[in-house]
Image 1 (cartoon, rainbow, N blue to C red):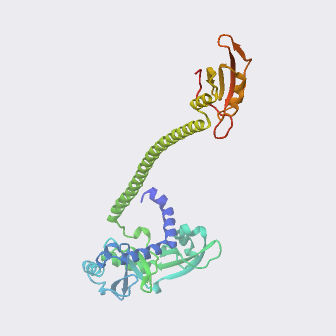
Image 2: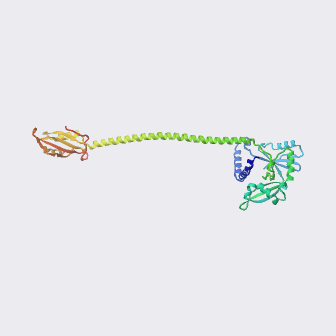
Length: 386
């Protein structure tokens, strides 16, 4: 174990204890079991990984083994057999367990174990094994070098600021004899525990340096699979972002096209409105104005034969100007008063007699009348002399 691992060991132990003390392991175990039960029977064994604890018992010179939590035991064998024979019988007893998942625990009897319940400060939670060594002389009749021990936190009521813990102690003389026999038989174990019913209690009296090392060949595969899964997640997220950007670009293009179409439609609508306004203006102007032809026809019908016009004008405001000669110019006012197209006829200036024609020269103006309303109206076009 290198210095970096030793430095991180307290943090790792703290994280393991926090994980084991949380309800998550039980939940995931239940959830995984439920999912595993949905698979075909042949496939369930492939997904039943994890440590499988098998308990070794020694009683009156006989060894037998059983799986933790199960009452069924294997056929016993004598501790007087040769090491290869004992190893073969042990392997036969645990043949249904994957070697990578197999964990062996030497199970001691209750008579060989000393239990002690302690109340410790919460700060001791991270260094329980060291606290157990310090408390050994005060809590037991043994010194720390005379026993194998373990101190674990147990659930239960405790005062505020303190935790409940259980100190489990076994004399070295009792344990060493069994460990020596197992070493001679070539059998390595992972823990020294005691049984609670058909299962192990959950302590490990074996010091960490005496536990057999385990190399998990599946760890590298699991790490590779985890890295591949993380890479796939990143790729999926990248693909999702790429697809989102592509969709956003396509939508932006559609929006730009629709905006261009909308601008074209707005321009066409404006042109249509302008055309409609212009046509409406022209139609209204045509409706509100009087045609010059109609004015000329009206004047032709009303002016006497001894009167002729030398000049005739209509401006944009509908103002009519007439200049000519007549035998009786003064009577023209009365003649034009009955006109439906002209109103406000009046002479401009003085009526003079032309010596050449012996006619009265006059200049008159009038205002065009709107035939529909009778009010003054503008002319549809300007006129000049006829």
